[in-house]
Each structure stands twice: as C-alpha cells, then as structure tokens.
Image 1 (cartoon, rainbow, N blue to C red):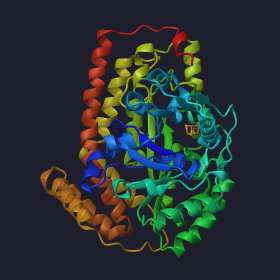
Image 2 (cartoon, protein in one colour):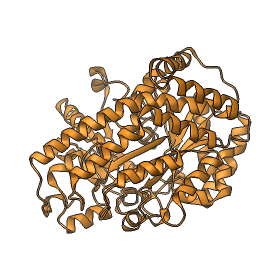
Image 3 (cartoon, rainbow, N blue to C red):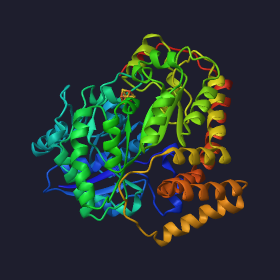
Image 4 (tube, rainbow, N blue to C red):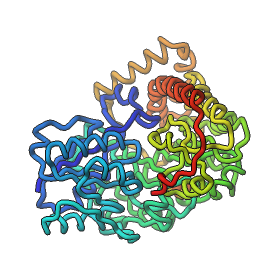
Length: 524
Ligand code: SF4
C-alpha cells in the first residue's frame, strides 16, 4: 500500500514567525508530528510519502503514486483540508481523514467526500482502518468509543519522512491529557483529564532517533501540559539528564506547562538541568474573577506575577498566552494584560479573543444560553478572529483592546526592552553547553538584525547598549537574547496584520451587527 500523507496549510499566525524564519532559511517552525506518528502506527511494510504543504506542494506524480491519501490537521487548517479531500476525490483516490479537527467536527470532511473518517486517537482507530481495508471496505467511520490508548505502546514517530532542513524545531510528545478543567479548553475533551505519559525509555528512543538523523537544534515537547503528571515527568527527566550529558547536550528543549510549575522547585531544577530553555504558560488573564469563572483555578492560588518571575529566574524563558472577552470582564482588560506583561517582562505574549471551540464546556454553556453566532463559526480558532458568540462586553470595545494590546506590546523599543529585562533576570543553566560556530546563513541573519535594529531603525542606541550589557552581565544568555531580538522582525509585521484584519472584521461586524440565535444546527 502506498500512502500519501498530506498536511494542510496553516494560516499566518503569531507562532508562524515567518519573517524571523526567513532570516535563517527555515520554512516552518514545527513539523507535523501527528502525521509521522500515523506513519509509524500503520504497517511498516507499507510505503509512505509525506507532503507538508507548509513546506512544499504535492506534485501530480505524488497523486499518481498514492493508493491511499491520509489528511489530518487542526481547526485552523480546515479550508485547506477540505480542498485536499476534494482534490483527492477528483483524482479517484481513496481518502482517510483524522486528527483533532475532524474528530471534533467531522461534517466538513464528510461533505467534501472523504471515504474513511479515522477519529479519536490513532493508536486505536488506525488499526481499525487497516482491518477495514484488508476486508475490502471502501468507506467507514472508525471511532475509539470513549477508549483512550495507552501511549506507552506508541511507536517512535517516522522522523525520517521529514525534510529536517525545513524546520526550525523538531517536536516530540511525552504526555496527552491534562488534569485541569478550563472551561474553554478542547484538550480535555479530546484527550481526557487523566494525563497519559510515555515511558522514559520511549522518550529517550525518540530523542535518539532524532540524534541519529543528525538533528542538533531545538526540540519542542508539544504536550498541552507537560507537568500534568509531575511524578512521571520527574522520572523521565531523571533519565533524560544523563542522556543529555552523555550526548554533549545536543538539544535545547521548550514546552507548555501549567503555572503551578512555579511551586515545584525540584521540577524546575530538573528541567533546567535537562537543558529546557523555555516554557509556554497559559496565563489567560490577570483578572482573578475571570479565571475563577472560566474554572482556571490553578492560576488563582498564587501570585501570577511571582510565579512567572520565579520560573524565569530559575532559568526558563517564559512565553504566555492571554485571552480577552471572558464573561463579565470589566473594561480595560487589555490594559491590565499590558501591565502584567510589562511587570513580568515576558517577551512573547500571545493574545486571542475568546472562542468557543466545539464540544467544550464553554461551547455547551453558550449554546444553552443561545449565544453562539452561526455566522462566525467559519473563523473558529483563528487568532485574529472576532468572537464566535455574543460576549457580555461590546464587541467593538473588545476588538479595540485586542488591537491595542498587540500594538503597544510589540512597539519595537518596548519589545526590545522587555527582552533585555527578561534575559537579564534569567539564571543561566549550571552546565556547560557546547560551543557551536554559526553557519553562513546564521551569520547573515545576525548581520541583518544588527543592520535593521542597530543601524536603520530608531532602536539603534538601545540595541547596542542592551547587547553589550547582556554580553557583559549575563553572557550565557547571548544566543537566546539575540534570537528573541530577531523575532521583532515577525512581530512588527504581525501587529500590522492584526490591526488591519481586526479593523476590517470590526467594520463588517458594525455594518451587519449579528443577532444571537439558539443554534440547533451547531449541536454536533
Ligand atoms: S491547563 Fe491548559 S491544557 Fe489544561 S485544561 Fe487548562 S487550558 Fe487545557
């Protein structure tokens, strides 16, 4: 069986870092880990060809070669996913679709003509697909019926199918699921509240596979909450540390975690020892009432500012996500987020207006209250989209606060000052990370940053002053500091796109103000 794995296009987003990636000759931040895991679960006697459309487009020869086309993706990839299903069917191919979006909302894939819906987690449903095909079946809906797979049996992803040069980071996954119950979160709907972790040996085998392929850069642990099972994560880190030492620290890790990480010093130390350099925290809002209302109680137990500072000082760079538009939010939430980001000196702060994702507790509540908006469901999951429900505050006020947050925080001088404060506060890792010479492309990127930020723009005095201060007072932070400066190239463009796109949507919204409806049609 010849399987063409197609990974649909992503729209531009906060995390796409296009302008910064361009500088270092990479095409995309992260690879399609789900797709290469699918390839590892299916029979290894089958042949696989992976096309990540964010890297390159498929050719007619790819289509002709394939006996089976598999397509997977997230909610934001829906338009391209639908396009690909139609293209495959137009060529008479057998098509299977799966992944988080299709699992939540299978309708669009069905309407596009997909043959097999392979829903829920692939460890359970992909073997069902293999069985169905061996029986000669040509269509079907394969479900796990509430069963969650034991991820200790998940094979090492087929990293060999990737064009490694196209990606800035590699990704691996240690756990699925999260013990918390944030009202807006679809992770707990898809993967459950009992975190399931791989074994330390499994993680080392995955990292060894990357090492053997020659990978020597960053690795993102894509868990939605890396510390969902603290006991198991510590066991894994205790085995990872000696492996990293024995291999001369080939990777630098980053991940996502809940903010209670700050209260576990042992875990923080282990992460730093294992060469973790960054962590994404879902702060959501500094407003305690909103956190309680959205059931993010773990963020209300300790001072959020102190928690972020503690994690940063321990040696992890903090990225954070914020949301505007919780019910009963008081005006000025955007300004309160700006104050929080400045107080904690978080360089990369990402914002979104609250979106109700299908089947979440928030979705169900809003549906009951008749507040979901049919006309805004198409843009679900897009970071620049207006809300897909009727908020308790005026939409225009929220949209303006949202644009203002981006505009203010990514004002070049302000951003660079935050990056400087952040990396000055950060304790360097105790171990000696091997020195690596920059290659020609990286050298050119550094010169471009120096030219743009240190000569051409009004940041010139600040840029050199801060650079020398890092070199003098916290030299081990030089590389991450400069990498974050490079991201300014992306943020300058992104804040402009946010302003234009949100203002355009707002104008349209004000022209045809939608009416709330009770939407039986959205009850899937
Ligand atoms: S902590 Fe993060 S992953 Fe866990 S439920 Fe909340 S939003 Fe979801």
